[in-house]
Length: 327
Ligand code: MTE
Figure 1: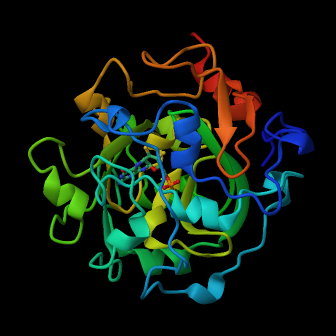
Figure 2 (figure 1 turned 30 degrees about the vertical axis):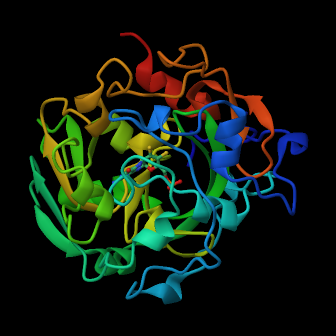
């Protein structure tokens, strides 16, 4: 991938890397920042708090093509960084469909969530609309592993090995028309399987929806993710399929996608619909632009608790800043 720089600044120094045995849950860490509790969990607040871990993390049952894991790590995205411990990332999830307004271990709430079969509809301004099962998608593409920084809008961060393939490859298959300027993504709508959704039917505009500009969706850093830590995605991380857009705040990386629609107008996004001043469509990581309620200058690594400087575009500026250059 020619435009990925060789020594990017997202190779944060070893001294900031997550220590071997550390586990600091996000609730403890948020508490240390004065951010835990009901305040931030109000309607239209994106609670990124995570709670006590349950003992095990399993890939979602029925996940097909598991023979493709672990996928080979792409050395262009292989940093010297120590990864966030799997248990910390796996137990501290943010998935509003399962927990609406307080910290909880999402793993304990996903028992009824059925992730196979999982048809995904690809439609709108494309020459080749299709409906394809997530398992089939996994078999259609070569999978690779990439280590990315992940930055939540609420100032925590992790370094995670995602498995998947560039979203551009899937978009190519659908063959978008010239008028397609945006992609809108949508998550499942099953309150019977998702207790958070069931409890907030009247206050949140379910199902969760997100969007990207076409150039953002086609950017080589934007991934369709089907696995993490060398295994198929567990439910709490958005099984069986999600996207990761590493230079944007975490809420842009929508989980458990069932629909992708190519459109000509900028779509609303879930959090923007609730709180437009706090969660705009673009939402690139920007340390110089405080959230209306807190600074974005620094972030805490979730397992060590170390505070590090937040980087513009989450450290991916050399690759993506040109997308936002004023014309
Ligand atoms: N996607 C859906 N469908 N529902 C959600 O609540 N939360 C977002 C994003 N994608 C969310 C979602 C937010 S706010 C964050 S920070 C990340 O998922 C968290 O991803 P993780 O739990 O895998 O760390």
